[in-house]
Length: 298
Image: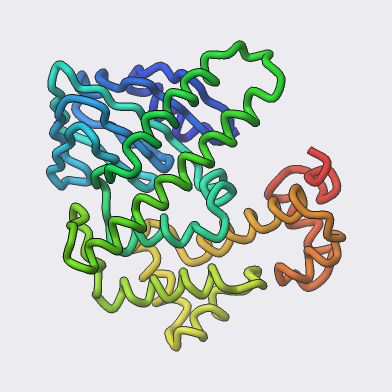
């Protein structure tokens, strides 16, 4: 079980309304104000429904108010937090694994938001305000059902996936309006430094590659840079190495194809880029703790 995000939440004495291996849902986090700082080690998505707040996010002063969304990548630090008495803040924490699983080919939008535009806060658009309100109300109803309710976790995951797709659509609309000069995303100008552009090209390569199980050297060669430089760029832009990015995408492709397709294991192994099924089996066992067949049946 990946507990890093749960540890982060519990360390500041916040009780989760729901959590499993990949997801934490917290209905109100006013207790943040009782602590000097907090570090969240999972992807964070929060919907501000009322009130105002001021805090430093990774050292940058940030203001929040009603009808805003806050989204942050793993290892984001919050400090100097002040909340109005009427502040309401619904928060979800997601591991990278479940985020990739939910978004699949749309993960590029999230990566652009987090690592290229470096956006942490932006408003709900009017078209999506009702969507987010109803989304959280339905999610709340499902979370409050007894643990033994059939398919409870599957239902919660499905609703979360729908909410994430709505968030993705909201961001795309805001980005398009911002490009046309009709709206401004908070902090939402793309980073055009050489390192950021290379990082974006690397993510595009990774997203568009069918065979993702490739070496850092292979991806670096496609960018005409050294593997060492690619790793340094990734680390600076995202706090993850190139190898970690490749690994995360490979693991999600493995999980997806084994659980959601009927492709033979050999074909999956070939498709992702493994040299043979024996190596593929060892890799799956190392990272998932089970054989490919067991993962398919789980």
